[in-house]
Length: 188
Image 1 (cartoon, rainbow, N blue to C red):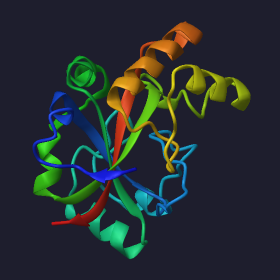
Image 2: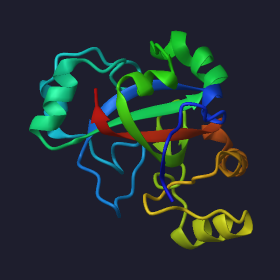
Image 3: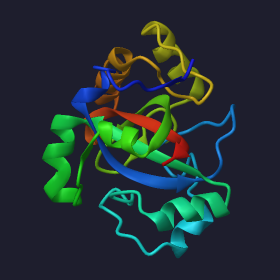
């Protein structure tokens, strides 16, 4: 069950927003991911003159992004990763990590869940790697993890557990990390 983040959500305070994107409109049964091959970027993104970081995400929300998403009926999405990892990756990827609280100053956001990603490529371990669907379902079942309606993990501890499993399965892509996905319900 997805939920609206609350200001005192202590789980989130150790995480940082690493960027924003405009993605195709989300429906209740969409599979979502930081991986734009899984959840496509809106075509309008190419027309926006705003700085992208090394994750190919916008560093902040400016009016051109908000206006474009409204015009195209697209979703504005924020992505977060653990604070220490965001700090370590900042020089390499040109990230300007923002505290989660930044979202509360910019409207109402719905937390969809966690994807598991290779931080260097932003590929989803759940959806992008050469793992058969049956094997993925077995891994999830063995770890007592269920994916929600958006194809994400709702529990942060479970997302770290699954990250560790993928670290062992695909060491050439490790470290994997949970990537929180938030979609704007309204922007202020």
